[in-house]
Image (cartoon, rainbow, N blue to C red):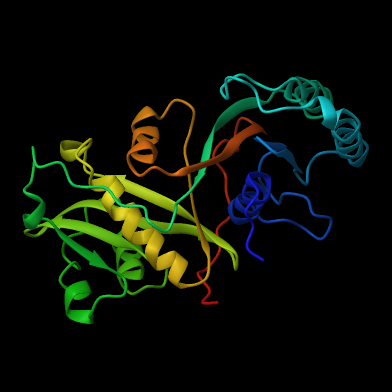
Length: 265
């Protein structure tokens, strides 16, 4: 049965974003990822955390689970996070705390393009499932946020499903698949600075999500607490909020996630 509880979806997204070793520890990633949903919590511990600390964190959460609830204000750190931080700092030294909301892209997600910049009819959406001629037309349109090799791999489908919004020969927005596993995929979205706030990010994300669902996977979308523009995209698309991810990281590993070669189901 597909996951329907928010905590199960949040756990699935954690597995998409970070690899695990044979012990179930996050491999070469954050020290702690703590996900808080309205119907439960998810705890994942990094491979560098000493075993006694990892065991203590799991036991402490289990014993306090009845008292752990989604904060009334999601941006407010949960009490358990403070305990995690004390234990990690004591064992491994300084940490950086980061957080942000997570969403599931629903099947019916759609958003119009704001006509203040481009007439919607003049914007063309090209997708990874389009005919080769349409995809090949983008080869010279790299928006310079990708290396030449990465752009070629993207267009060839070697990096997973994608959707691009173009006007004439200019790429305006891209939604792609930076990381995925057999159950889900995470959205990666870029919009040209000149046309942000015009609905283009939402449009390509909606197209990308349909492609991901076509592979049998769940399409996830997450962002950081201070990325308000990305949160506005989520609001325009009416994405389903599934929880809030809190991360305790070594200063040199903030933002680290898995890097997996796209595999067809």
